[in-house]
Image (tube, rainbow, N blue to C red):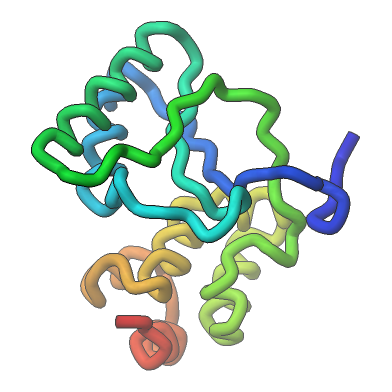
Length: 161
């Protein structure tokens, strides 16, 4: 089954992060997540709610501990859900790399490097360019992407800050 955006029904938009625990611990991912996230914030719909998903009891305990520590002393309760990871359904292609797809020159150059849609979507370079346009990162981070000066300038002009 490959549901579309229109027929997913009751869903939550999320990202899946594949990582090597011998290089990066789950607890480190939780710390990075919580640095830029308010675990007590309210969601305006189930689709955009805050959640952390786990694969086993050890990850579940780590997620609960990290959220408890992040909310210690807060007058508001934690609203970030901690739930078992279920089936992850990738968003349709046109929902992938939203910010970057608006930067035609840069997107075109990266699509030439990654002509297969799956490779484009899964590329770290593409994710960095998209994240930069979403307001994360610094202009110097663009140097390693292999873009022309014209494409890098386009990204710098479109930066959301």
